Length: 335
Image (cartoon, rainbow, N blue to C red; front, side):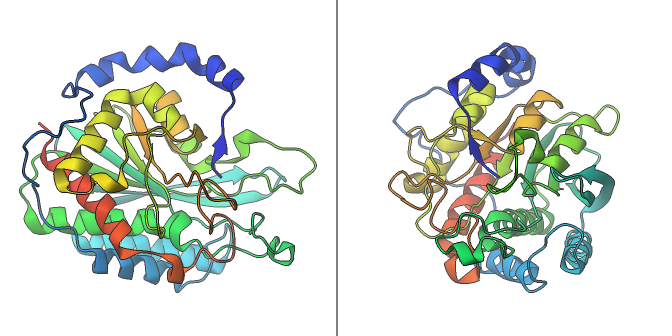
């Protein structure tokens, strides 16, 4: 789904970038320094084996493409898993229209840790699979569905494991909402008659325009493709535009937790993703943790992006660990 945004598009949304000042000012100010503060890792240990198992469980249903049986079974599994852990779970169903006029039976899944807490942090990821491997090096695969072990399952797997650790530890006083967006990856394939940037992130668009009354989150963090082999997470451009203080907070936490090598203090691309409607519509300052492969000829999103090779063989537990432990560090240093 992830599309690089041009200068013109950036200018068009520039006037809205600063509308979140009040939200950002509520977060702890973070100085941009290369020296890591002497803060020990905090919070429970993220279990990468467990997260990997959650990713595999989603892939066992097959590609979770819209309107498929695998899609519906996986939705039920995600709901059941969060409930089993002890989260309060709600679903948000909607009929959304794809770029080709197809009615997409969409289900956003919202799982909440400590639902009565007034101070809340939003973690989010998409759980659907792309129906077409239209970036595969073999054109014979371009109409085949993507298994989406990384581009979908990895973000959900990390969130479920974080939720499990929070419920097990029970020491975090703030609330955390885990929002699983649907219909993210039904964006226009390259062979379509026309390209429509609004055809991506449909579930996030709907959620951000239909929030529960009075819902607020201090900030949000989107997880997208957070389990790939060789992944590094550069600072995404639109995240810096909308919520630079949160980018600094997360990248500092990565260094504090011992995973700074996965989060280089360098800029990556500018991406349209689920965090854009959350920023624009819900006005929750939200960043995107998304890999950037500057030297990859296949795609700057990595060699398996929108290919049939996005499978469990190409997931790396070390990457899942780096992201998961960083997020636990963020949550447990939140005041």
